[in-house]
View 1 (cartoon, rainbow, N blue to C red):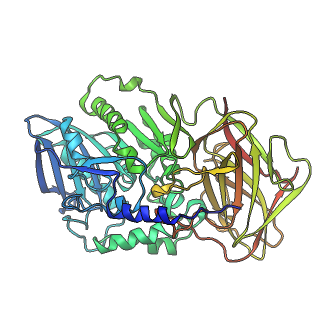
View 2: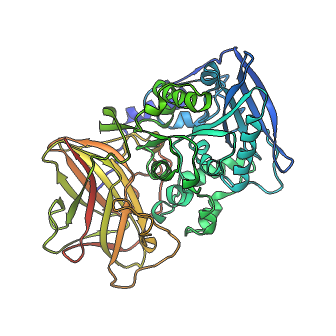
View 3: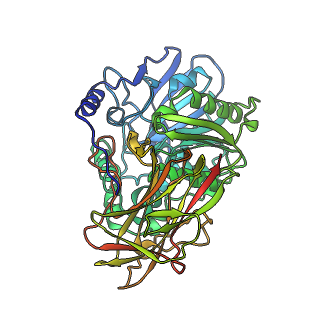
Length: 553
């Protein structure tokens, strides 16, 4: 049974002190050697405008442009003792350094201007100093994407611009890059979506068809207090299947042809992780790179290593500098053995790595074990959906890496209900003690990887699926009939974890999320179950199995 660790009084006191004064965040005074233009009006096709702050080198010349648009209000900066509330509440392992002209999750103008770029930071329509429409704009909707398109073309045509524009930013500032990139604006030459969902329904609001109940209401109630944004939470409550409205937010990834530097965070599971992997896999770009990590979201983004990589990328595609970017290995792979340290960083030619072996492990409910050989005898495991769980263990007989997405096939029957939300997680144990890893929003006590599926939305789209990665439409509810056995195929979030000989991999299946939404640093939570029981079947007829991406050492 999964047991969530409790904080000690000393840990709680340390976190409270961190909220008051985050010691790992260093805000530097921006260089005076920047030409800063505030509240510049960028004209839109409908006659309105967007308010932007523009940062340029003091010298004369034409510069490539890096652009971002978001609802975070460009003029809310970490100055005069103010600190972005997210940086106070979300734990970030490691140091974060940026200048006091850096908006939340946006590029640091201080760094980019010093390296010969113009930076444009734009208020989304209805936020900051950008005017409101009569009707609030839908977040990530077509109107917002058109605004970004218009801003790109305006920036590319300015006298101080060299005509080459890139888009750069984290989370929200990554999510709205995909659809505009698929439209291929003439002046857009490269994008860097640093951790961003690519399907709002599948990655954020309803991963696995299970409704997210913590971060979503918090975020959109907060956005309503300082802008005129659309109430996405209400739409979430009213639209439980992935209908045409949800589908309208998804880009045609194959039409993205501009060069792309993408990031998969193995920590941002059931949010950015799967969405980032999807867009990297499906983008039509001839030149695309992937950076993976399992550290802090902003720790990585503002790090020296990442800044150097992003600069190399944009220097090549926006400045035309022959710096060897085309010879840069396609995938930077970070392997973790323990949560607070990197086991290895190496470079691969593809994701998942080409030397991965897809190894099935079969569920033995009698022994609570995972076996390499197929199940011969029949077994079953039953748990209470509101409070219970079952687990299955495998002890490694040699050092092994598990790198990539995992797939879990379960045959189940329900008692006392016709529908349920099923959660599955992978834990690691070393010397009989659980190993914790960084999770979404800086949570320190996460498991290796996790997933969920709503039984009534279990239908797999075989034409979109890969042998190791199922995809779903989530458009039709099919509750179970009494006595019916259902096949569930669950897609775990990708990860990269090292298990040494003797370590235990433990699969846990239960009817509730693995981490409480009340836990500090962890606002995400998901709808569980109030009643019923789930019976997992495993036999020659009902082959319940866990498919793992194995690299034996």
